[in-house]
Length: 524
Image 1: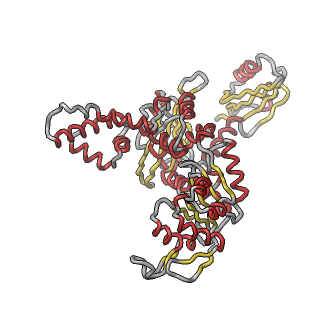
Image 2: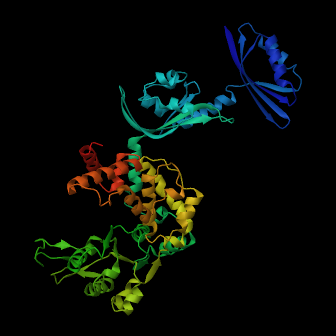
Image 3: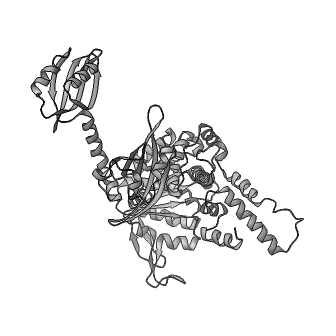
């Protein structure tokens, strides 16, 4: 039998140290299982794992080692540096929530963490060294990565004796310094965990200033001012063009105010005058035709200890503006049909994209209400005045849209960003998001170039192209047959321009089911 020892040899650096060690080992019939060399300035440290015959005289062996010139000292060690690094790496990998599976250039497993072991129903001892084709995988796409291919967010559904696992899989090749493929790595993300994270981000009831995207001085100034007044009870008036995010700003003020009640938004332009009044102030039973017998509380009551956000305040009728003035002054409301006043504690935030001062001059908005709601006016800058935020916003939208739509578009090129910055953005951030979503759905490439960007006017031209020769009035046939022919042509062109049927349905503005029915009808 043989015995194994791990040694640390410290030298003054010189040429030929490794050759001298190898010659000595050969003379002593000792095998070098592994060796690492660490050179630092004039010092060289050699780590050895040696296998020696059971009959070896270790004292004589160490005395022989000491004859190597420039050797300063010898020590036995428990683990080699590489073993320590591997153990630290394994600890990190085992504490990750994603499954990690790595193979070498021959397809043999070299890395597998605890999550991947659980998903695949194996342990590291039996899996390591085996070819990936021998493991219980729904497919062996990781082997494709050894040819230079990669895949992203591929859906996997694995049913095994130990349970069912649904996960998204991403695989990439591993290159060395010479760009040779030396292996591949696969990352497995649990679908349920992704859904929970997505819900936590997208469905969060709280929106704060930290969630706002942008670093421009104009936006930072508006946020800084809003944060100073957030904790007060003062009425706030937010001014900004359509699509700048006025409601998000109001919600952030509510969140940072620390109020216990809810945030209740209402668009004053969305309801007729009579309905708007009953929604705001509520009513008693039988107050008007169609009223509920038990009556109904208004939004001011519902927003108790919270915030009520009145968007498009400029569209509020003059008669209702007088009642709003009393609410702000007295902090009380009276339901329609009631003589009793109810105290309220709701903070009021208003917003508009109109010039209220000009509307006051034109007698279209009450002057006394104007001064009541404009105690703390906040101006949200339009996107054309914060072009430095466009790249940040695009990357944010891309991250969420790529995940939701199953694409993998890379951030726009410098030329594409330049085109985005030149555009005036009448719809502001909302319009930018629409453009990016449209581009993610319709772009035929994985890189966003200037020609890939589809603005509203570009979309109109694209839709005209779908029709082809539809306007050719010289065609003969009945109206139903012509319509069927044109519909079939539109469907075929939409499929050519899209990556999937779902994308084609989005392009045509119809549901996925409707598209499938039409394809079946036309036998496409």
